[in-house]
Length: 428
Image 1 (cartoon, rainbow, N blue to C red):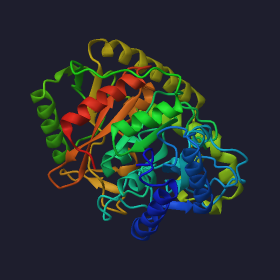
Image 2 (cartoon, rainbow, N blue to C red; image 1 turned 180 degrees about the vertical axis):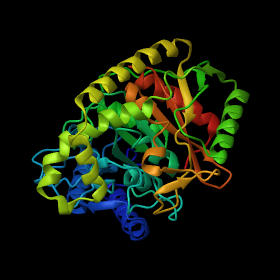
Image 3 (tube, helix red, strand yellow; image 1 turned 120 degrees about the horizontal axis):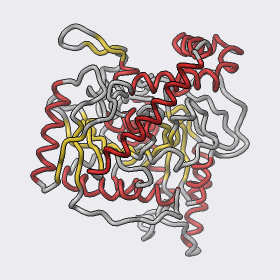
């Protein structure tokens, strides 16, 4: 509509500003907005289009960023009550999107310093009585609720993909290092990724092309082979999630997609690796900041900082070695398949405010760890991965399908995901 001048960028912005105001009354997905600057940017976009100088498909399109991305002139809170000084430049990916003409409208709610999986007080746009997941839950819910067409998030242990799955949108996490983390408040540099949240794979492709324009865009093909893990790194999987996963596999096979068993390398070590790398790196990144103003941070954050600062160096070094072993074994195991598919999380979106999941046998799991059990395979290896909306489970809650690709195969993964999306037909 923008490209044909059926609507102006200012009209698009005004429509989204109204939607932001309505959805944020009940869902609280925005930390703050910058609509005055956004309006000026939208006016500039309209002027470029009138001058036949459009910057491409994102020119004039509104977007939001997670609260841990630097934005010029704004203070970066990273989900806390303690802000860094106002940023003097945009994060690299924010700068790239502005260069493409996209219009930044605001910052979204996240877990404090990105350590968590609930994004309180944000609510799930699909069901306000449910959590959006985290730590990029505000970004996912904003996209699911049509407050913005797309948003940025960060992903260390599933923080883009899990909220995407719980909110019923597309969450794309390129391979580690493909998108620059310059200007992103770190959680764990060894595992940190930047990702995108959109309502379709096509939008994710457009966005990724704008962020890495030098890469060749590849066509999809329908004769790919998908690996189905024989074991998953989790303490359990909810029956409803398991049943929907089997239904999705049946749909894919009926559509002619070939599936084969996949021997998941070292499935019992992922949580150990993630924790033993993330916790000490988290403490190194934020220890001074939290100690300087402990009253500004949650008790759980202070606790993890304390644990991380006392973490044995030998255990951290061993976790890095294990991570290298896992990555090498994944490279070998992927020789027989084009991608691996799993549910994105062992359970569906938790009830809002609920901290723990209770299994049928009475045992419990903390949602902050449980929700990332499947997603951390792609974070530990650093391989590209994407979450696709794949319908609802039997309770009417969104089901997300995770697709893990090969290193260096970001565009190939997107092309494959677009083929799978066409089969699943689960656009929000």
